[in-house]
Length: 130
Image (cartoon, rainbow, N blue to C red; front, top):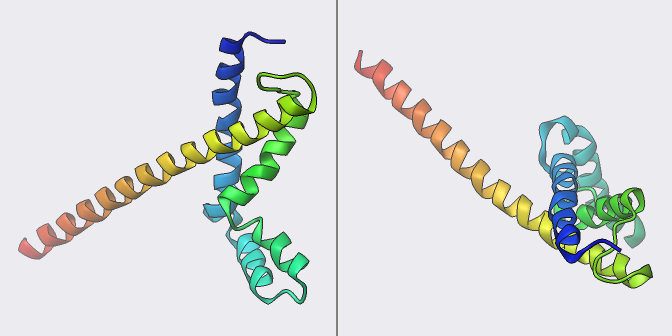
């Protein structure tokens, strides 16, 4: 079993790729078409199982649970306890940290977009003046 300090370091490090994958699939342009298909299926699917399955690919929080399960399988990471209880604790802790990272990223992205809009507006005003 790893030391508590090592476990916490792994917790914060493993959450980074989880957040990155979950955010990219649910928000970024590279996955726009599959995401639009999933959004449509999540609203118009004939069964509740179909609607919920496709919804998972549109919600970063929901999707992060599945990415976390994959990362736990790949890394064999457990938190505090051995066995299934360690996996359970690690899973929920990783989801929480990954979603914290995504919330921070969303705030930063909003600020960057606002700055871009302000610069664009100032450039347009300068063109009008000259």
